[in-house]
Length: 531
Image (tube, rainbow, N blue to C red; front, top):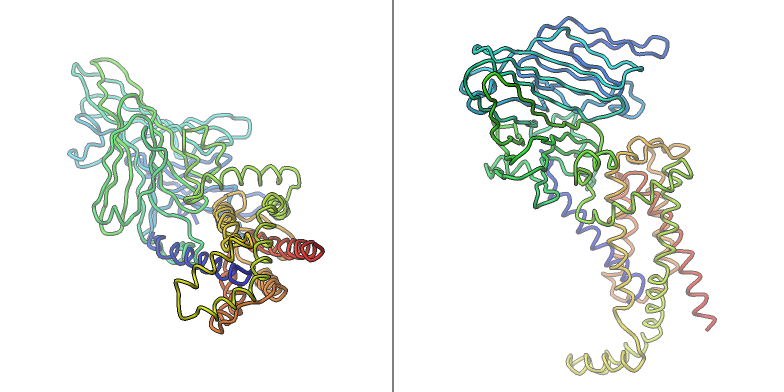
């Protein structure tokens, strides 16, 4: 097959993939109590007195915890801005009338203070309303206390570590009664199913949406996504497992509960009202003996999808980075890309280098592809003669074509197969470049200040379209069908339109790949002509 038909096949497959992705992904998938002021390049936070909440500032995040139940209702991440060049930190957890996303935890079971039968959750008290992890501190402990009517003493403690996005949540139960008490610890993430327009980043870019929804891991299954639609339809999870974790996913960021209790945990989902989905876990029943104490805890990750840190926190938690069905290719490609970045210090340059290296590795396939196309073009007059001679008898026509291919030792699919082999690598790079937090707001040069976002002036997509158009023009054209010819002429325009909203990093990769294609094509055809 010739290059034009290969481009047509590739265009059809890629367009089909993009349309399938768009159909598949769920579209429905500052701090009100703080005042932030800029003073000599420093941000000072003055907390308004609030008896209902506790506020925590570490070197990585700012949290608001509701004393009623001790749930985390807001979480802002200092290292990540809401938008490019914005002074406002990215808020992962939030509680507003039109959207909420909370990390809840508590003690249920027969004697649990969070048992729904009691009608209300415990209201904790603490020594102060504001806690801060200072520069000379490695850890920050935030204890909250509640005493039950039966005299049982509960301490819920949040433990923060410098430079970390994981939080240890621990319950200390002191049984001051003469009875055996029964508890189960739970951790739950609940979120609005529909996003308000000011937060809906998923519908801005055509076919560039990461998965937004629930996820979990069990002892028998490393990683599973669970759509909000399944929860809405009351097809809820109820899985018993040792270890494991539960999470809420979105592009670049994740929240996850990792149980640390012994025994069996139950993973569940629930539809809480018309616009609220929840995923959580509940530990096995624990028994606290009379006049004894007991400790139970869990880890909570609230932050960016930093793979090397998440895989240390819990097995397979790094799989929450949405690399799609080609994660086994995307993960090593990202590690290689990060290695290149460590040498050059620029993600855009690293993308150029990985493109050069990958195309160099795939050069033998490219050579086979162009050689096969060259042989097919040389056979085209004989193929036309056979078609004219046996046009009325399809069976004989097919037999004669096979004989010709065997006699000339030509594989008619030789030019197509290398293209199909290269396509998974392209898609793996596609997932890697759109799903890696390291590329969020990463600058390249000149007008490209964010490789994860579209080119603001559409210069790169236009250059990409021109390179595709040039490849098409320098390639010998043997397509005689006028319909196919029109489609081929429209391909560069179609791709340019698609790539207008693609991340600049992905468009940059494709431009470099096209330039390499032009050079390789010229070199291969020049050598074939000399033979």
